[in-house]
Image (cartoon, rainbow, N blue to C red; front, side, top):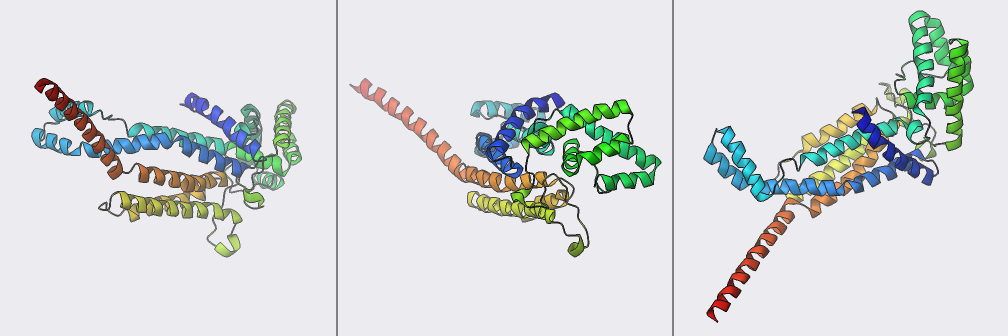
Length: 354
């Protein structure tokens, strides 16, 4: 599975890097453009999925007849259903494939956003891993288990919050080198052997060099406090604990609410008799709000872009390829075929009479 994602991530990483370069190394602008491109590229899949749904609606009366005919005989029902699908040219996997592709792409995009050094700055992942391992596993974790005072002192020197999980390699290393690579070196000198330090110092210098060459701007709209590599930390004391970064998960919540309302409106236009899904529509925005306080701002910003851009495009597809319109087109085609057949039959009869 990892190899599969590598195959997908590398070309997509070049696209994201290209957008970052085109937008003056602005990370947020690159993510927005990338989201737009991905959603445009997925339009054919959305249309295919919509067509598959319409085909299911079209053959539903015939399926109902088969259910009445075969009752509880599942084997005969399954065989008859398969034959019906073949006769009508309906693919049983037609609606699943677009969903699988979307899921794989979503996971890939998540990796890209969580690894900007690797995929945008093109830093060799081994160097990022080397620095992360030396700081987190070989220094901080060792101090945490054996010397609490030294651990707290090191956190202060590296300007790391004790609640930070430091699990993501790229984002941890970005924040370390952006704050003070010299502080990192001083800390590692006191915790690693001379041989190991020389190895890590080389990796750290390469990371710093690449970062200085690319100079990616991770601040949303250039605003300090909206660093998309950092994770918003919720505080029950909203007044004193408020962070500007809270705007990201809140924005994701609002964007999904807007997208859900538009989607509900479109569904109502396509199918006036459809039951209201207001309760379900509210669940995803609330989940995004909750999860958004545990993930880096870049992921939350992608959700905002995806909800607004993807929601708008998907609503357009649903309107143009709505069930009623597509069924009308299907029936028009069937009538056209029938008319052509009858026309040919009349022509044959006319020739016979002559």
